[in-house]
Length: 79
Image 1 (cartoon, helix red, strand yellow):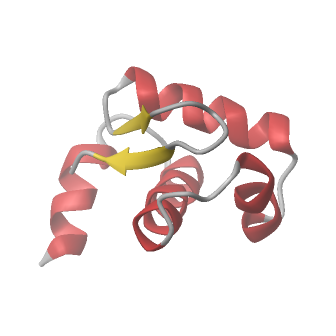
Image 2: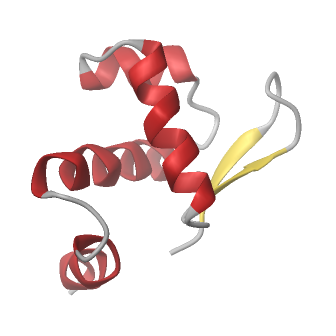
């Protein structure tokens, strides 16, 4: 299933807790590609700076991409 694919690709890179957070971020982006950092922070009960750290790491590994500008653009989850 899809869960296994996530696990393989993400599991090697990060610890369990961080992994779950990042999977959740990607999941929220799939549900709403236009979701903002603020909305992600609220959904995850985190600070925006905490969310930005995760986003940076996800972008670095090429698992998410930002399409268009910060305002009016959207996220693409490349999985």
